[in-house]
Length: 390
Ligand SMILES: *Cc1c(COP(=O)(O)O)cnc(C)c1O
Image 1 (cartoon, rainbow, N blue to C red):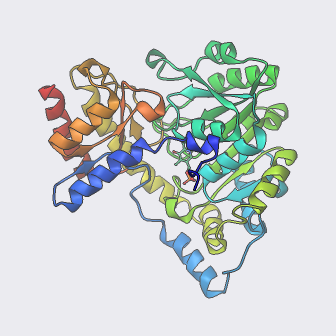
Image 2: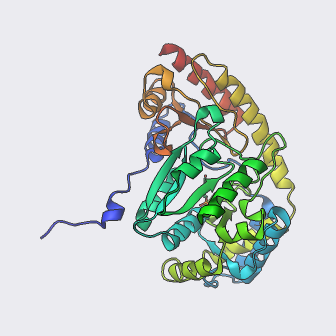
Image 3: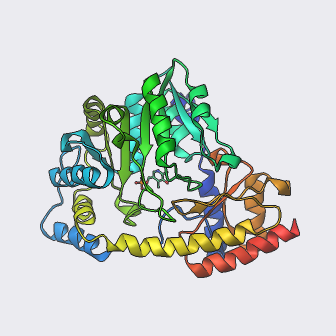
């Protein structure tokens, strides 16, 4: 028998380092050890009751069959309305496709939009799935390392310098994972101006738009002008804002031609996302929004606490996150790469953090504060002890 071979593009996808640390932490917990984890990539709150009730009602009503491939008409129209009212974007329901999470939307968009020989610009540090999605499409990720001195924000000059005749798109994530970078209006205006001038599409991942601190404003790049909207593909979902990670629902809005292509791709792969989940999503968008405020207050309190303590540690530099729920301290002064640092910290203090390497920054580790204050306090005690021991 000849040896099993794997598709070339798929075979090169590395196993997730994030999962490596998480599974070791789980094993330690199972063995009865105390572990303080900063590894979470999802809010620790339960999904708000009224959203769950809507999905339960949908089940009781027999909404257990296939939905239309791009999503329920009621949901697409609720999304169209949300994008208009909250983001200043004018997308008809027909320009919206609902998928199994924003991650799935991003995958569909990138695979449908990008081709072999084309390039996609990825500001670094980046969310670890972007480069792999781009490689699966056959295109090449082009990394633009944003400097810590500029709060890890890519400058207009850095963006423009990375553009070549092969550049098809840029991935723009604000607020960002893994660092909570938030670009302000004038910075976004400059990036959009450059993208339009060079005919580069902007894939705007807005999954953290609701998690902003210190009164920061969320600006959707597509809202700047009708011309901008034509070059922007807006991605969002329910996981982070409404604490619905397990519901697997996200969406994008964009040019009709791309919508048609993604529809065809999705129609031959997953079809529509889960039907009764979508009823919950309608309730999320159309129901009371005070749940967002409550979660926002808790995240803001944790963010201030964790940032103050981490940035006060000798030898560490840390950018204050403007959004999302992560801090990304620079630990390069301690002579360990991010994976070695995370492994040693877990073994010696039972504190789990995520190495920066898969986010394109091997001198940093990511601490999520989507966990209780108690976990943050005790975990940081261990983190500080560990640093002192180095
Ligand atoms: C969590 C996350 C997503 C996707 O979440 P879904 O659960 O697939 O909707 C997308 N982008 C970033 C940057 C994220 O952190």
